[in-house]
Length: 96
Image (tube, rainbow, N blue to C red; front, side, top):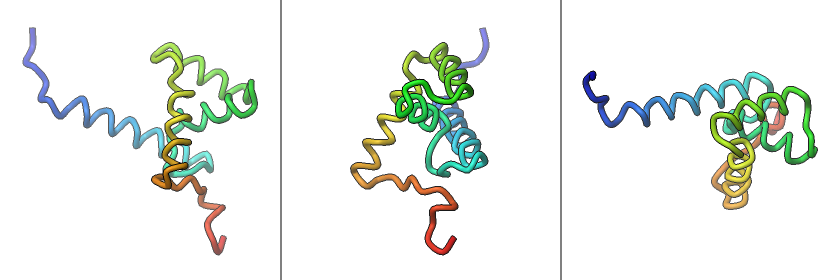
């Protein structure tokens, strides 16, 4: 029986998780605005099967939250359609 966590800690840790996921996606050459989960969901969804690594990671994410990568990719598409998200990669920017 320990002390209760301050209310802001779970949100802080969640935001930190998103930031780490975006960093990982940017390091692999993807959009710095997209999480790894979204990139995996797109790879599996667009190609039906997707690259082996995407399928393995998707399987792991499914154990944490069933359908996580697919849900995240759908949310990213929705934000893109609304114009609230910029999916470009560094190499897609003008002047590169």
